[in-house]
Amino acid sequence: MLATLEGYAGAYCAKDIEGLMALFDVGDDISVIGTGADELCVGRSQIRGLFERNFAEAAADRFEWHWRHVTRRADTATVAASLTIHLHVEGEPLAVPIRWTVSLHRHNGRWLWLHRHASAAATDQDDGAAYPGQTTEPQS
Image 1 (tube, rainbow, N blue to C red):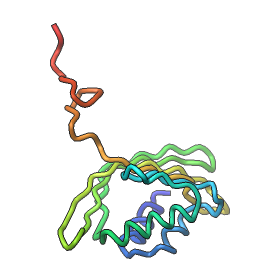
Image 2: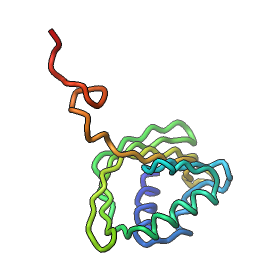
Image 3: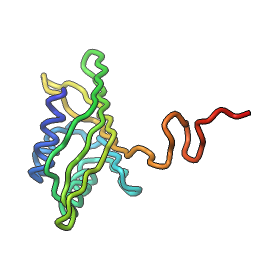
Image 4: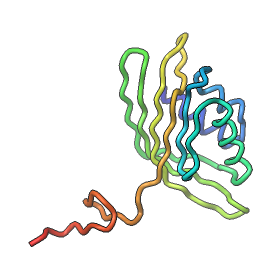
């Protein structure tokens, strides 16, 4: 199942929309949540549209994996990961730290994606604080 992450990264960097879509289950109840406020997609058409928009706005060079955790039960699995996507936007390099969750199921021996969620960690939240704006010092 981790091989599907590398498959995603390779297809994304190559702007291979068919390769990306081949990672997902064939059903139309698949979903993707991206980092943008409007990136809530259900179904193959919406997901394809999201990827096409991403490809029009930037070119990805590589995915740098930092941490991964897999939970597997029979023919279902969840992969949690943190990574940095190295991109070029309007010719300028950009490194985007991302947190990912991918839900998969195995069908005919192949792991297929049912859902992918991407988020960016809060940058205005101190280490050790549960919410942005809180201090981590003990209260008196």
